[in-house]
Image 1 (spheres, rainbow, N blue to C red):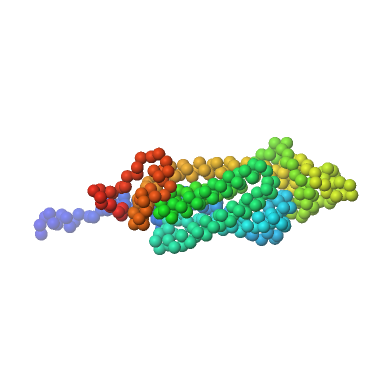
Image 2: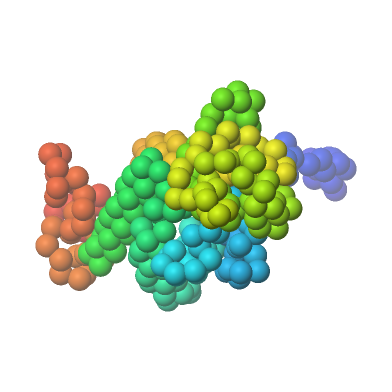
Length: 364
């Protein structure tokens, strides 16, 4: 036998450095999950989990609120049930909750890329229409109830109106762009709208922190109508046992008139988060809602705009797809048929990638 062949046969086989490197670079669990759900980047999966989990948890845990008398009456901020128990505000809070809580659940699948593939595109469209309608109805309920929710202060009412305007404008822009096959802008406006709606979840974190701070300071007061105060203190709630009319008269003599009738006066109540003191808890929560919602709407607006600014590659990819869809649909100015900056602002003309000598190369 030839010596060179014999030498080759006797040479032991060792794994090459390349094979070891490939083994070490095998996909991690998070990368596998991201790929299975359709995310091109692992950090997109973590951002999805970070934002979707609080919204989904918040919405699911509040589904029992749809049982107004059994659950909501004992769960709302102290004093609010005085208005929600009957009449206009009962219908208002019911409309708002029955519409907006499902939105918090249904919005989650809309942001999973796998569920936007051709296989599930019909589901994505139907779910989008349901969300669109529910947001409109939920906003109507919010406008109806805002006068009494958490005291209904001017700060609360103003941010509710602004948030309704923002979300309505956002979903209309998303609708307009998808009808024009401008997918990149549809994505941007849906992200904005859902981020603004998610501000209420962050507000629920800010509120108790603010309440504890107000309790620690000790000299914050909220003006509360006597009839609301008497109703709150006479109820058996999660916050305290009912108090007798005599106890109410002792604590707030301005609320009791001749013959023991509750007057229409207003009294200042010290904001104190202490069990057994429902009026103090209510006085603490009322002024925090408007402040918290203003703050969180501002923060969520900044956060979503930063995210959109940091993901131009995805926006450009979707715009290329939009170009070909618009071209096939015969829309004027393909690539910019929706609310792009080229059509609405002052910007250089968008150059169609792959367009050479009158030939369009469809991206693979």
